[in-house]
Length: 436
Ligand code: NAP
Ligand code: HSE
Image (cartoon, rainbow, N blue to C red):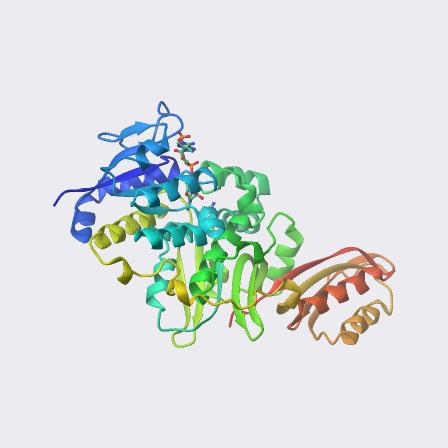
């Protein structure tokens, strides 16, 4: 049978990884797909740039639309990133009747609803396994493997760069900016690394996971987002002393009133498997009502791990080239007409436990003042730790772990605590999840 022609838009970290994997595993891939797959054309910005992959038999152009409009190409693989040109490229490919594979989570999280409805109309597929969790097949697992379950919650380490930075800060006590530079050199970071550090990339990914898990439209703007840049070494160490690890998590939880969608640094008990996922590795814990908790683990970024997911999508699309579009797996797992609209809760209405660190004057009665505020607001304290006994009247850190409470209550407590004469400066607050 005639080979399937693939057009790549972008030949950077993931694009070159994709070409290398397709070439190296050509025979295995052909045996799986039922047809051989060849990259015939690729668009880049700078055709003179040296590339890490073999470009023989690939026609290069600087015009992505030359690839998208080529009638010989059946599958367009969008790997340039960003969300304006990539949106134009993907919509034009769909209008041209071509299937699309993309690793672009920003594009799917922000424009996915429009893209999938255009694809549905044209009877083409837009596949995006590489958009979440790098090489981990989490989209397939959620969309197909767990199709019999009602998903209760999921929680994941879904940004490789951020996890790499946190792990190196904790284990090697390395400087934040030095580790970020290494993540960039290894090809893990986004073109704008503030997306990794400020939690935006994780929020894109959480948007996609939540949509597939709960059968709701993509709603990126509703995600509560905190990054890792405000984390202090002291908290990493106190958390360790208390038997926790700090991880940057994306959490999507179905509760009675609606759905919680939040991305933030989180204390997790160190005995949980996910607390021990370090470096660029990602892991997503998914709790289904039938299966119970399941954990998906693997490299979350990098050339070939991400290419593994891109190529799997190309194989999937190749297999479906001849199948009835109405019988394909729906883009967001649920049939397009069956998406629900539960309320996405503002973070103030979410409920969790908290780690708090405050600087207080070491004077009789101060702890009583502090605990009275919690008592008045009906927030139960799990434990209190005073670091350094300190001299009388000196300022010492006090660490408090609370039990579960609504976030708006905790906000009130922080306002009251920061008003106390004996508490100095801002109180550090990190959410705690037991992930039982
Ligand atoms: P990258 O290394 O920066 O590569 C981007 C590629 O796009 C480059 O080859 C660049 O050409 C090309 N390009 C950019 N603008 C173009 C234009 N206007 N016309 C033609 N070509 C253009 O990016 P990447 O790391 O491979 O990431 C690609 C996508 O995958 C992004 O959406 C990213 O979020 C996603 N992703 C990345 C990873 C990862 O580990 N890196 C993992 C999962 C998902 P030149 O090479 O000539 O500059
Ligand atoms: N910048 C992303 C990360 C790439 O570090 O996780 C993978 O999506």
